[in-house]
Length: 204
Length: 173
Image (cartoon, rainbow over all chains, first blue to last red; front, side):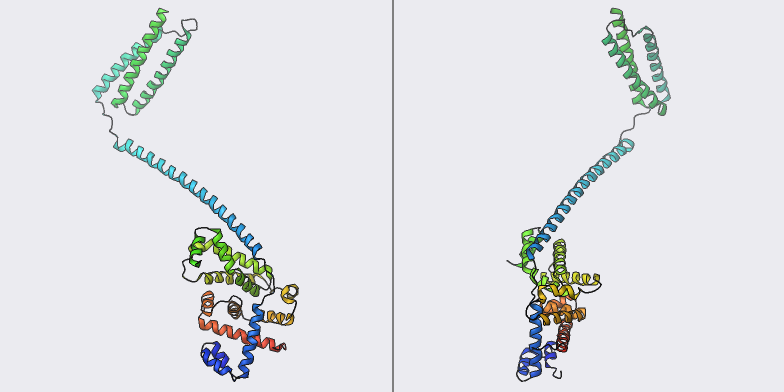
């Protein structure tokens, strides 16, 4: 191979027109061009039979499966996101509650020592009355209306548990006005109920 | 229909639009893959993988290159990987059984196939994209990430070697 025109043309160093002019009289280039055209046509001409429809079916089913998976994944992500959002809201509410309770809520007024003594006296008076009344109360199957007795008993148990809670709270903070008031009220309620129950028992 | 419109429909998840792209490109892709890999089965596998990869990533396609460039680049990379994984190229025994090596020009086709396999990979890729893939030199440069001059040189060198190889085997036009 001595002529370099075909190479120059292939590498873009001369124009198509220049090469065509040269090709008219160069047998070497003519032979190379002809051989290349034959090679290219043989390489292009593929006899093998492909199955594009079958191939598309495979692609389509893979795509559909993939879309299904990504859709279900996105549903899971959406659900997880909702749960996380709900959890975040709950945490914020709880934190806000703690802040309001501990820092922003008005603190109950504190009692002076003298006022505490007055409350304790009042409580003791109530307790004394309750103890006296309790001596007269008899829960018995043979004693009057059983349903009525059970109702009183149930109510007294509820009041007793409240009184117990108030005492526990006052152990931590004896000067808390609110709890002192609640305790007095609970003791008065208990006294009233016992009085009523004694009266009912006497009448029956 | 404009390719951009089809791609936008694909990006919106329309499988029918994806089928249009498949119909448009499956033939040059299959032929290129066939010449790169040497057998029908691998060629179909490569094209299937390429289309699935494209479907997965088409939402991120930003028209920085032509869609065909993007598609061929994916296919060529798949073919290169598949060739690397295969310890040897498909044995000639299995290839001889295929329709490619029956009928007229049987001997020449066999020699061309052998000669193609002997080409350095870049020369083979450039030559096949140009002839079988029917890509322009500029597009081949983008697909293979080389200069247009490099593409021209690789195609020319491939032709010289194929010619020499066939002349050696007494191929006469």
